[in-house]
Image (cartoon, rainbow, N blue to C red; front, side, top):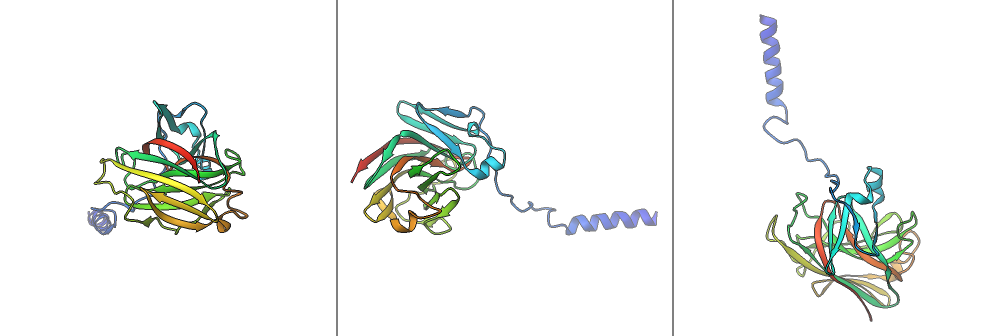
Length: 237
């Protein structure tokens, strides 16, 4: 009896002193959750998920791109870039669109970004390159690219800017107008009419980064995110 009692006491002590009793275990990185009705349902459009998503076993059909009355509807799934090969830009230009996240963080428990892609070359291949500017519904943005490995242009962490709209809370709606421009020797990202980042073109069009700022344009979404895209247009400068 003494041995049984002693063992029971030892187990009880271990449970009481365990860091996971009465508290949640440390948070784990969130993985992409495949959508049930995935695929591309927008005429002429193509897509490619990120290499790390492919390594994790994800496929393009685990995300969804639809189109209804000119409105692109995106729900991910794995992080993905979408484009229509007919959408090309060269020289000095601006590509912009309006992104509406009607259910902020509806598919996740923290903000995920979405935005504009330009300078797409060899898209869909192992040698693809492009650059993108994306906004978060918490008032921050990033500017990054693939060449084909991921590279950073803006700061390592998302940067805040007063021009970027903030959602009132989880489940509320938030809208961002995102524009990415090539102007002479600069690449600029504007959100809601304000330039939030301006970068030297020569530092971005280089080995291991962009092949050129001339190329296909499109849109990009992080994993587990849902929003609509309207007014995707390109204007020459």
